[in-house]
Amino acid sequence: MDHFLYRDGALHAEDVPVAEIASAVGTPFYVYSTATLERHYRLFEEALSGLPHLICYAMKSNGNISVIRVLASLGAGIDVVSVGEYLKAKAAGVPGERIVFSGIGKTREEMRVALEGGIRQFNVESEPELLALNEVAVSMGTCAPITVRVNPDVDAKTHEKIATGKKENKFGIPISRARAVYSEAAALPGIEVVGIDVHIGSQLVELEPFEQAYAKVAELTRQLRADGHDIRRLDLGGGLGIPYERSNAAPPLPLDYGAVIKRTVGDLNCEIEIEPGRLISGNAGLLVSRVIYVKSGEERDFLILDSAMNDLVRPSMYGAHHDIVPVIEPEPGVETQPFDIVGPVCETGDTFAKQRALPPLKEGDLVAFRSAGAYGAVMASEYNARPLVPEVLVKGDQFAVIRARPTYDEMLNRDSMAPWL
Ligand SMILES: *Cc1c(COP(=O)(O)O)cnc(C)c1O
Image (cartoon, rainbow, N blue to C red; front, side):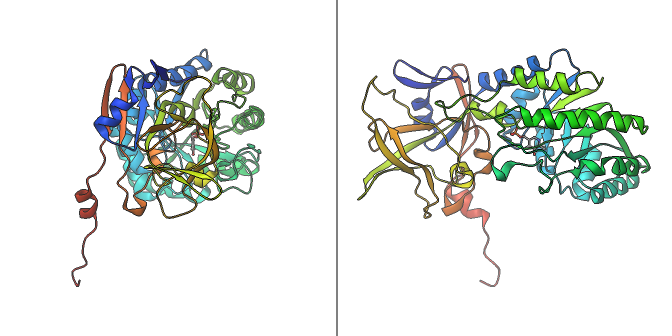
């Protein structure tokens, strides 16, 4: 559920007409709903109620500082995957003890910054990383709290580019090596073991892979405790999928996901951490765009928009589907027409949808991509020298630009001329 609904024939973001934002900000732009972000966060709170837990929002899905602040003010922790994200979380007001640091390629410099600024835990993904972190912590006269990310060799049944829990993936250490790595960690003076981490992929639409992975984590918890390790936290990752296509069956609800967690690891007396990204931010955002031209081809008609693959890369990168709706509500029963919906970038890959049935649209009309709040703005670029797409946050009847569109001067000034030119 989200807070982007038609009212009096016009698409609204909460209480603000989307067309009003378009007039003020220009197109294309992302718009996020505070109420939707809050609602999704609370669904996880409910799902884990009764267990000690921390919901660590995965800011890689949407890292705007205002978005982070909305969630942090509800008590969320933050999952970061780079020191840049760490600094953004800090800038949004998140204390270090609510930040977990994931990712397979943390540099020593990144470790140092996080140890200095305070960190809840590092989710360590390899033995070389463990040794590096130990070195850095010892050199600083401190001790780094860690979990080890284990790779449970479970098929997440999702898109191959976002599956992370199979043994051929680059993530984590094989679960079969876990006991050896934990005993190695326990012997290091700069390392304090606090738990276990697992994350098997993104946009999972079934619970069964979670169930399999968490059952393996439960078994490992018992083994590691028997080996003498103080396993007191389980970080269970993110990955719950969202309904990108309204016409498809909906993925499992957070409440059912919570039931899997309770059933598999609920009796271990551990603090549960989860790292949802997409499920919190995905349906909380639209990408709003204007039709530049309607072009009739020999075989098909093209809707050429002013947004492109550089603004929203998911369709060209993952073959992802986004529902696309007109901002003016179509009359009931209006006849639809198939369009190929494309952007202006000079690549055939810059195609959002093929033969998508839409009501009649003309030059200047506004359309909205639904479910664009996650992995949208964060993956945007300035390819084709198109200014980075701006972001807007709505709360009730208010809206604010939370990242401005750069001016052409700002864009040009980022390059500099080599002195010999
Ligand atoms: C990407 C990622 C997440 C968030 O995944 P979603 O599918 O957006 O919930 C959580 N944890 C880690 C380690 C990740 O890499």
